[in-house]
Length: 408
Figure 1 (tube, rainbow, N blue to C red):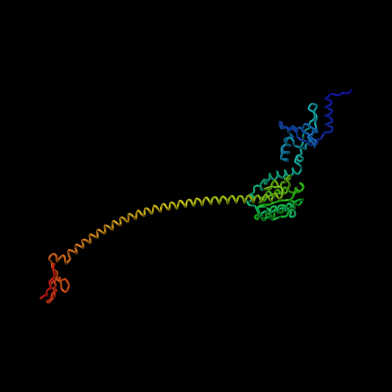
Figure 2 (figure 1 turned 45 degrees about the horizontal axis):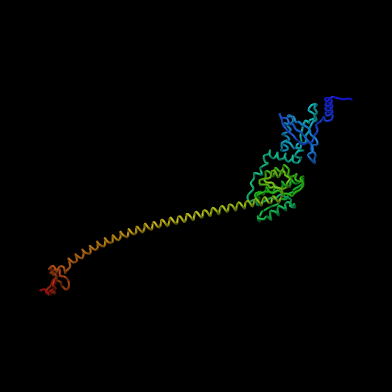
C-alpha cells in the first residue's frame, strides 16, 4: 500500500495550482465578510444559488495594503459607494495554497463597472466631471418665479408625453391659464443630444419671454435614455439661465439630466402638476397676503375710528369747557356792564338833579319868589333901559301878578 505524507500532498496541490492557475483570474462573487487591518483588507467571498441563499462556494480573499490603497479609492470614486458586506464584485485574483493555512485568493484588481453597471458607471463619471467643473448645482440654485406661467417646452411634437403635458396643463381643475411654446426636438436616438441643445439655444435667444424650460418625453426602454446621459447636454442644461424641469423617464430611470436639472419629476403629467401646484401656491400666497391686508386695513380703520371718537369726545369736552368759560366770562362781563351802567345812571342822575337845581335856581319863578321882577317889551325880557323908546308898552311881572306901563 503506497502512501504519502500530508506535507507531500500539500506540495503536490501547490504544484497543481501553480501549473493550472499561474495567471490572475477574474471571478464574480459576493462579499460576506470584510475587515481592514493595518492597511490590508481581509474578505470572505461567497457564491449563492440564484433561486435561494444556498451557499455554492466560499473562499478567503486578501487584498494586501500595497494594492488595497489604490483599489479602494478607485472603486469608491467610480461607483460612489464603499466596499461593504453584501456587495457583488468582479475581482482579479491569484490562487494560492498554503500547507498550513489552506486555499486563499490574493486580490490584484477590481472592476467597478461590474458593480454599478456600465451605464451607471458612465453616468457617475460624467457627474463627477460636472462636479469638478463646479456646475453640477448651478441650475438648482435658480429661483422659479411665482407664479410660473410662461413655459418653453422641449419635446417631440407628436409624442404622447407632450399631449399628456398639454392636456393636464390646459384642463387643470383651477382653470389656471398657462402660456406654453413648443421647441420641437428629437427625443430618442443618436440625434437627441444635438437636437435638444439646438432647442435650448433657440430658447436662450428669447429667454426673457419664459419663466422656465421643460424637457419631456414619454416612457421607453432604458437604452432610449442614453442621450440624456450626455456630458455636453448636461453642460448646456446646468448653465442655462432659466430653471429646467425634466420629466423624461419612468420611476426606475434616473438620467444625468434629471440629476443636474432644477427639478426632476418622472412623467410629463407630473411636470404639468408641478406647474399647477406652483401656481396654486402663488394663489394661496396671494390670498394670504390679501387677507393680511384686509386684516391690517380693518384694524387701521378701527383704530382710526377709535381715534376719531376719542378726538370727538375731546373736542366736545373742550367745547364744553370753552362754552362754560365763555358763559362765565359773559356773565362776569354782564355783571360788570350792569354795574357800570348802574354807576353811569347814578352819575347821570346826579348831573340831572344838579341841572334841575340850577334850572330852578335861575328860573324866572325862582327870581320872582325872591323879590325880583321881570319886565318885558313886546313879550321879550327887557335887559337894558337903553333899548326903550317913548311910548313903549311894558309889562312888569311880580310874584303875585303883573303891571302894564308905558314909557314917557
